[in-house]
Amino acid sequence: NTHMQPASFELFFRKNPFKGSFTIFCGIDEVLKFVSNYKFSEKDISYLKTIPALKECEEEFFTFLANLDCSEVKIQAVPQGSVVFPRVPLLTVSGPLL
Image (cartoon, rainbow, N blue to C red):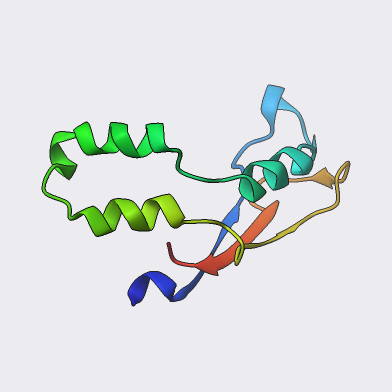
């Protein structure tokens, strides 16, 4: 059950946009909305079944994808509106590997 192993990653940027010396962090509400509503639709699953590389997958794989949710995913972020700098994590996402 490797897919249930805990994993985490950090999101950061390498350079400030527009050659600036700092950046203002915003958009966490969009991230949270996306993650809380993440789901493979029936249309998504049907499309994946047409991809040649996935033609040999067992039906259980697609059932797994159809039931996948992000309920165990945890997100930590710097506060909205904070001044942030390159190479400093904006978000840390933790949860099962898949």
